[in-house]
Image (tube, rainbow, N blue to C red; front, top):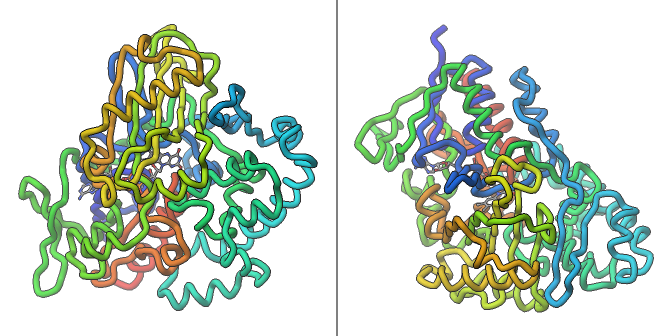
Length: 494
Ligand SMILES: Cc1cc2nc3c(=O)[nH]c(=O)nc-3n(C[C@H](O)[C@H](O)[C@H](O)COP(=O)(O)OP(=O)(O)OC[C@H]3O[C@@H](n4cnc5c(N)ncnc54)[C@H](O)[C@@H]3O)c2cc1C
């Protein structure tokens, strides 16, 4: 039988993982990509002798990578390393950071004098979070749904005791379990990954604290995160998968209501038996298929995760004050959280994340230097579309960081690159610059998230952060598994 040909639009981790699964099942795979190299947000920038991971710097649920390579019967082609400590959190006005360990006794030492009886409180808090995680992992997260109704029915299979967690928020649940502001703030940071403040995020998402603090922790990759992309691309190339970079799909060919291929920005036509879209599943439906439900007005009404403002610094000297993963917070958490999603003004006292991958991967920086990645989450382009003040925000962040780590970064910087939400939008077609894609409120997950099979064309499927189950590297790998199941089912019917 002739091999079915699959065209994958986008080479983010979602597209690459799907290509790996499909090529190992005998499909002929070809990939087109707008950017000049593969990886999507999981990308790398090399400049002035420094290598920077452009986006992701760690991941949870490392076993999803094992599942992916087991599925295609290959050993994992890169080495993963657990983070220990998981991260460091610096509060304004306090010199020493809170070091967040997975080991509960170590973590209890971090909060000694801040949260009495911390360990017992943590054990109790995580018990509930653990139950939510395991009661939803297979019933909801790792499942395809045929309709919102089927999804709603699946929700009824989740034990009723978790229902309360849909109607209270994360902050309320944390407040029930802990007294100190520091513990509550640190454990609620995960809410921002989901695209909302802890005051809006349903308490069921405390399962993310279980994921980081007990279940599998956080991991990164020896040699830098881009090793993931590079090694998967090598495997695919060996299998004969063809890549076409600098190729953006800008429209579709439709004949009598049938999809007859796609057209790129140079006018070339792309045809296959099956199409997998790794571009944003909502924005692609609106932009390329012109679906009314996903027109710009409708997309703008959806909830999106914050946009990245990222700074990549190559710095002379070693900075022992910095850990590999660091959060720098201010002293006005609630006010900041309430404002950051919707303001049109750059923050005066920004909250930001700092990663120094040269700490454990010395080859990423010249000898005696560090590569510093700074991520400041900012409102997306719906709320702040003008980034003429990027230089000012960069200076503010670098000055603040220099003071807090007692190291003059302005003087020691030999390489500097800044990407605003406009750059992220332009490079990878991130809708309005939103960094993690669609948010994860109750009306944008499961059967209510843009589906991984198209509503109109039976041979079009979606993989990646804005379809099911959601954003982040492990979720995107799960998404490649779910879409592969869909495609196998489809092929059986034609
Ligand atoms: C700054 C930042 C930091 C992050 N940190 C973490 C982290 O630490 N841990 C974590 O787990 N997650 C993190 N994430 C989220 C994570 O990067 C994403 O969830 C994940 O990489 C998404 O993968 P994807 O395959 O869905 O999409 P993408 O990586 O966006 O890939 C989609 C690809 O499709 C291409 N494309 C789009 N439209 C077209 C078109 N019309 N034609 C051709 N090609 C097209 C794009 O150029 C892109 O290469 C971070 C994201 C950002 C932005």
